[in-house]
Length: 222
Image (cartoon, rainbow, N blue to C red; front, side):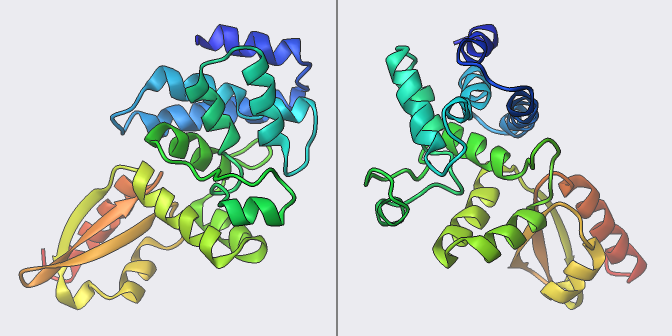
């Protein structure tokens, strides 16, 4: 499905300006993330545009299911339907869905396209992008620990890492955290010779790696 067709469906069902503004931001960020992945870009774009079509019917927790129902009636590609159906939070397990009063089914994203749209949605507020730290803080307040962990794991899955090797004296998490501050990234470390490799994931990954390289040089450990 082309983007023009997807927007036509939104107009057919009366998507509001505020919903459209959010959708466009999610679409743009999903495409940015998708560019770093081996995935179906056209599928990501169409699904990102349609992910909140259910909000033309309800703004409740069931809006993703409502959206999937609309799209199935319209005969839309089932791959798009599944992306829409599975974008709530970091996805919902069967038990979580039942607890929330939704049809008991597994709504956890599986394909990379499903994960990209889901995660892009989590990183866009009403209209503007938020950091992964903002998303984690919100999830910690509102979601189960299991759902929070899915959010974090999804971040590592959809972003291509930038890497840098630093001396082992700089490899503790507190030192790395201090170096990169509140940049929009998460990181992992693994031992490598006399140091460690830091893999950085997220919107500010290149900037964070540059900061870590500078720290390494200033410490005389590059």
